[in-house]
Image: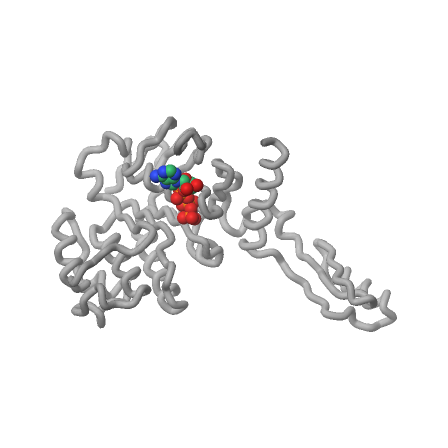
Length: 295
Ligand SMILES: Nc1ncnc2c1ncn2[C@@H]1O[C@H](COP(=O)(O)OP(=O)(O)OP(=O)(O)O)[C@@H](O)[C@H]1O
C-alpha cells in the first residue's frame, strides 16, 4: 500500500530552495501530489525542473524547505524507500551490448515486487526488440527502454523527466495510454515535459515553474483562469493589416464585422480559443516582464 503523509499526499514539498554557485534556482516551491495523480511540471529551459525532481529523488541536497516523498525525507530515507520509486531521467542510459530482456531481468531482481519482464516489454512496445542489443536500437527505442527500466519495479511514485523525447507520434500515444493505466492503479506521477499537448492529455494538474517559483498551478483546462481562455477573433482589414480582438461573444463580433463590411465576410477571418500552450507562453512572458521590473 502507498504510504502517504497525514494530508494524503505522496509528495509534499514546502518552501523548497536551492542555489548553485550563489544563484538561486528554486526560491520557495510548494508541491503536493496524491496517489493516482499525474502532475506535470512545466517551465522553460533552466527553470529548475530537473533540480526539483533530483531533490525529490534524494540525488541532490536542498538548501532549505521540507520535502517528504512516500512519507520519508529523501535525505534520510531507508534503503528500501528507493525500491518504491521509479525514475526516468533526462537523456538515455548507457545500456552497453545488453538486450532489453537481459536488462529488465537484471533490474527486476532489485525490487521486491517487480512486474513481469514480458509485461513491461509489451507495455512500452519493445516486445519485438526484446533480444536486440540495446546499443543497436534507435534513439526512440532506447528511450522506451529507459521507461521500461523505470516501471519494472512497480513504483508507487514515478518520476519522468522529459520521458517522450524522441518518441514518434504513435509511440507517444501508446506511452500516454500506459501512463493512464499506471495512474489508475494508484501510481503517483511527476512528469516534466516541453510538449504542452502531453501535459494537457495526461496531467490532473500542471504547475508552471519560472523565476524559481511555481507561478500558476491548476488542472490543464483551468490554467490561467477563464480570462486566459477568452476566444480571439482575428482578420485582415481593407489595408491588409492584421486585426484581433478578444471577446467572449465571437459570433456576435463576426456578425458585426460582416455588417460593417456591407455583408462581405472579413478577409482571413479566424476564431481561436487559446490552448494550454498559448496560456503557458502568456504566463512565462508575464513572469519575465515582472522579473524585469522588480530585478
Ligand atoms: N550541478 C549544477 N551546478 C551548477 N548549476 C547547475 C547544476 N545543475 C543545474 N544547474 C543550473 O540550474 C538551472 C536549473 O537547471 P535544471 O536542469 O534544473 O533546469 P530544467 O528546468 O530541468 O531545464 P531543461 O528544461 O533545460 O531540462 C540551470 O541554470 C542550470 O544551468
